[in-house]
Amino acid sequence: MTTPPPLLELCGIDYAYPDCPDTLHDLSLAISPGTKLALLGANGAGKSTLLLHLNGTLRPRRGEVRWRGRTLDYSRSALNALRAEVAVVFQNPDDQLFAGSVREDVSFGPMNLGLPEAEVRQRVEASLSLMHLEEVADRPPHRLSFGQKKRAAIAGALAMQPCILILDEPTAGLDPRGQATLMDYLDTLHRRGVTLVISTHDLGLAKRWAVEVGIVNKGRLTVCASAPQALSGEALLREAGLWVP
Image 1 (tube, one colour):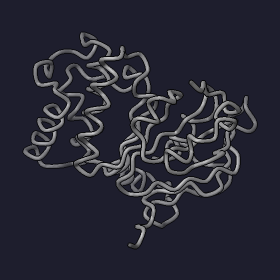
Image 2 (cartoon, one colour):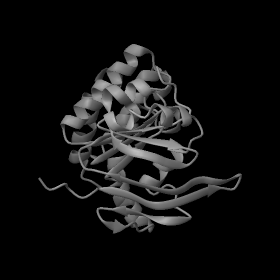
Image 3 (spheres, one colour):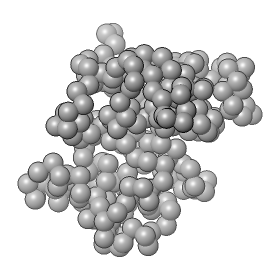
């Protein structure tokens, strides 16, 4: 059976913030269609910075990003097209929710695509339904619970109908029931064909959920393999600052 080519690749990228001269170093990652990839690493390892390269929010100092086999074009039109297919959900939903109601927030992305009103409405209602937000759709985001805010942020991403959904620490701030519910929603998306990438420092979550696991340590991707293989190296996990039960 032929392995499909990666949808999205980071190829030997370096990136540095002004106050951190070596945030990412010579980092390569290939995201296969249909996978569930968990990027594991301690706080400050570089996971969030890595994720922001995947939809062109950050541009590498060295190396390149490839989308469907082609080097990423950072023009505005090309980035808009990429972000319609590669959606990022931030760790803190308050960084993403800004409109007067949940419904207005979810409609923002597809409206900016210039879609017909009927299609925007269909996408919004489908996303609200998938995230079980119909009853709070006309409520201001600040009146939602934290778990509802997380789901509203995901609904806004889903309304773009992306083929890759990227979530930065999706279970952070949720109680165990909220975590389980959110991961169930993500599994539903995966069954519908969405490729999923999450960052986390929760080893148990990665073991239960992921098909592939990458370990990020001090700005480097030290391993990326099938979940059983990547999680079998206890010394490597400890070195990356991850708690091993």
